[in-house]
Length: 104
Length: 362
Image 1 (cartoon, rainbow over the protein chains, first blue to last red):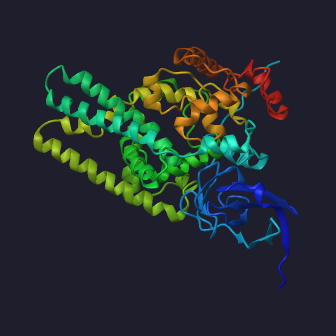
Image 2: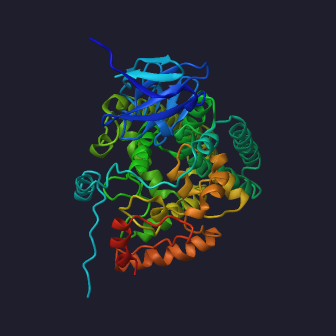
């Protein structure tokens, strides 16, 4: 199956240890820049309720939902405990010419 | 023209809750004041230092006051010492439970969890049940039939309000729930907000707590003194008044079934001692709008967004002066509520809610 790479933004658009919302084709994603300058992507909404994770707080490899403080490992999508019980879907990310692409 | 007051059904399995789901009031998108991402990120940053300092003061004071109270037990000197101990046990635990439940008090996760468990025991709230009930409270704040933590229902039960300043009903229900959970029974209402996989944890905690209370009673019988219970358990009664005093102000007398915290929550300026006991939850509009902001950053958040919020009540006295008459009016007309006026600098309330609500506030 061929991968469908979509350009998200320039790498500089996301601060280190931060997250940005990306909407595409009626879907919403969260794109992360880790403290060690790597990029990751997940579904944009918390699996607990309809809340945008991009408004949350990135701490090391954790994204914390802004509404109920549900925590996920954004590198693996793993839900880290109540109130989130369902893992996040993750997406491949690549960097080319200073731009961030995700495969969806 | 007279209008029929709307009958509210607070049962989590009742008609009002079903209506809220059907009309989109449940799990709705709430209003929040715009804050630049960089500023919000700075406000959300975690720190251990303030909560470690406050926890040392809190638990250290409890040990000192409880120890001196026990030492002077039998003389009048123990009374003020134990009354102060009781407030730290039966009221400060309310805010510690709350903040650590949000996971924002400390940066270090295990510290949040440890203080959360201790505070839950003191305030007699099952840490599993109440984590989930509070999650629902933030999703559906004061949405009738959805929010399990509505302190004052309409029409208000004033006897219950007064009695709860002494924690009597809260403790009674907490004990009933603890024993029920300890016997492995999760109620139908609890099942609406506690996922099945979490329910065994609620039962396990209830059994541990029941064992602690049985042991405390056994020690009291062996000593032939009520002192062990005065130190463990009973402070939830004689020290509850402060958390009720401050907690009623959070939403009391304000709008229900809205999706703008400026309409249903109240920010009140308070004295430093109450703010220490309450861990800054007097900035309650701010807390609901941005629950990720730690308690120690709420004054800063308040300063940044107060242009968009109703003017805070200048004191608890001011809050009660408007709230108590509202409760009395709700006895005659349960649709009545206090309409929070916004300053000219604020973004207006969403018209679809504000306009419908306005007549009820008259």
